[in-house]
Amino acid sequence: MTGASGSVAIPSLTTPEPAAKFAVSAIIHQKERTGPGVLARGKSLAKYKKKRARELKHDRFRDTTMLLADRLAERVTGRGGQILYGLVAVVLIAAAVYGIVRWRHKHSEEAEQALGRAIAITRAEVSAAPAANSKDPVFGTEQERAQRAIDEFQKVAAKYGEPYRSEARYFIATNLLVTDRPKGIGELQSLAQNSGETGVLAKFALAQAKETDGSYDEAAALYGEMAKLNASIVTPESANLRLASVYNKQGKKKEAADLLFNMIDAARKAKDKDGKPAPESSAAREAGQLLKKIDPARWAQLAPAPAPDLSF
Image (tube, rainbow, N blue to C red):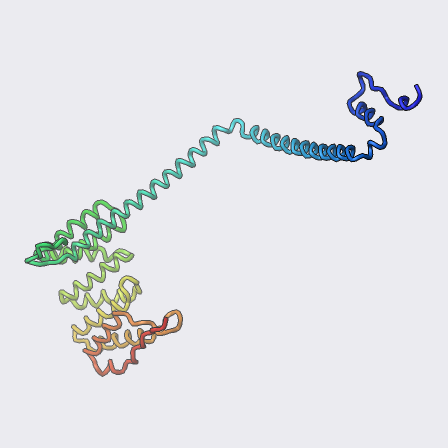
C-alpha cells in the first residue's frame, strides 16, 4: 500500500502502548504541530513527565526508608522485652531518686523549723509579771526557760540526723550551763572534740564558761587554740579579743595591750579586693575601746582608722 497511509504502522493486538502513541502523532499535520494548542499540550506533557519523575523519586525515598525501618525492626526482634524492662527500670530508678530527694528536702525543712522554734525559746522574755496580751512565750525564771529549751532541743536530736542532731546537742549543752552547769561543761568538752562549725562553737562556749568561772588559764588556752583555727564562724579577731580580756583579768596588762594593738593595727592596714581600706570589724572596734581603757598611751600610737568609703 502506497501514499500517506503507507508510512503508518498499523498496530496489531500485540503492539505495545508507545507504538500506538507514535502512530497517532505521525499523522498530525505539520501546521497543527506548530499551533498554540499543540504547544500547550506539549508543555502539559512536559509538566506531567517532571511531576511523574518527582513521584518516582519520592517513592524510591519511601522505599529506602521503609527498608531501613524493617531492618531495624528485625534487629530488635527478640530483644523487645529486654528494652521494655530496661525502660521500666530507668523510670523506677528516676522515680526513686526523685522521691528520696523530695523526702530529704521536706525532712530538712521540718528539722530547721523545729530547731528554729527551740532557738526562739532560748530568746524568750523572762519576767515575773508578763504582759497579759503577750503572744510570745514568757518565762518566770532563767532556769524555767532553759529547761523548756532543753526539752525542745532533745526532740530535735532524737528525731533528726546530722547536722541538726549536733546543733541541737550544742544548744542543749549551753542551756545546761543554767540548769546543771557541770553537766553542761562536760557536754561542751565532748562536742569541742568534733570538727566543723559545731565543734568550734562548742569550744568557744566552753572557753567563755571557763572565763566566767574564773578558770583563766584554761580559758586562755582555749581562746589561743581558736585564734589559730582561722575559722569563719568564730574569727581569729573574736578569739584574740577574748584572750586579751582574759590577760587583762589575770593582770597581764602588757600581753593584753600588745595583742590588742597588733590586732587593731592589722585591721586598719587591711585592704579589700579592690585595694581599698577594708572596713573594721565589730571585734576590731571593741578591741580599740578595750586598749584605750587598758593602755591609753599605746592606743594613741595607732594609725587613725580609715575613713568610711561613701562612694557608690
